[in-house]
Length: 168
Image 1 (cartoon, rainbow, N blue to C red):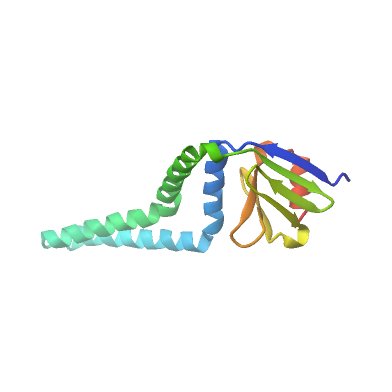
Image 2: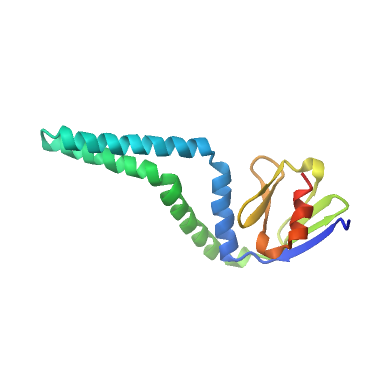
């Protein structure tokens, strides 16, 4: 089997946005998202029940409405609000830093992965890779718990993807 890989790509705004959104999804555990959803449902239902049954004065009505709003916020935070905010941040960051965006070159030869661009370079062996995560649009190669190299799937073939995933 040919153990060589050579990929070059210029990150587009879509690549960058998908990378940020998918990285956000990797950082947020399913348990935390489920916790927010459950708290949101409890808050909304509690606010609605209080509003329907216990509205003796204007202060109580306002409190029950605020509880329903807080419940909706918690319920939709990870599915709607956070991705929308992160998408806007990513677009602004990409547009502000366009002049610093340069072509990325990823090479795999004899078990050594080299990622380079005009500003930096890193060499990784299989032992120095913390983990490799595959998402819908990207492959993330973590070389410690926070730092990673990402490769948009649009820039690689299925065979190249398998070579990268086999580095684990």
